[in-house]
Length: 327
Image 1 (cartoon, rainbow, N blue to C red):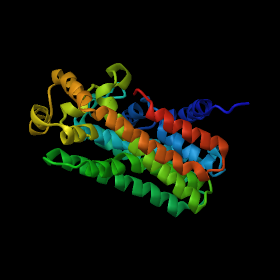
Image 2: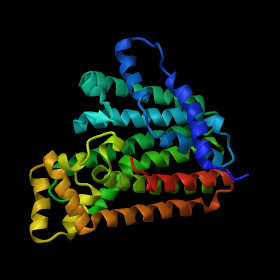
Image 3: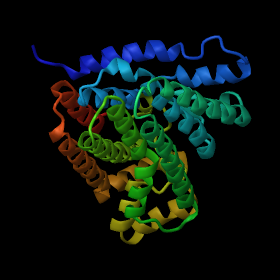
């Protein structure tokens, strides 16, 4: 019978959701745990927990032995989103009102802090061995995300940013967390050095592909599918892969128009469509898509040493699914 990775994903994430949704039910004080619940019960792809599970399976470990670690990385991810939304003044996340808008900034900061504490508590439940290495990888993941966020903030006030600098930033802000998921899953699953290294690299390349695809979707997706305002990066004046590529390729009036995004620290909502057309005209959407495919191929290359066939097929499916997603 043909193995279907999507069925494995749905099955394991359903089990995950059952435990995750009940994580802080009826806990007090309500002023802290109600906002935390708002985050926990928001929808998501649960990409990071699934990566922990698949990485454990890839080294012939049991998925059931890393469920708490999977919960930990999702809590960590949501912790970063809460604080990221505050810094970006975002009013929507996954189609829902962001925490600092629904409550206030102080509540959101405290809820975020609590999520990271809960993440460590959850992670330690699965640390039957390699505790120091697992906790070190998890903590380093947080450090990298903070460094990436800091670079992202620095870029907002800098007039010039190179594509190479941008890739370094997303490697830290996005890719490092996927790398962390793979490394702790492989460690807890009992993987050897070669397996852990291969899965780490897979997570890193997957994260780079994922973020550049996000940049594309920000302007090319439909708002209903994406769950947030289209063109948000341009409206906020963010120096994304697309904008930096466009600035490099454009000439004359087109270049002057792109420079205004930086000079004015963003554009108006009614200008998004004209910039989308400019990006298409300059070929930067196509260029970015090629880069997504390149990173995806590099991710898939790391799976040659993976012996567990189900995990290998699932990791291949996941990479291709993320490359072709619409939201």
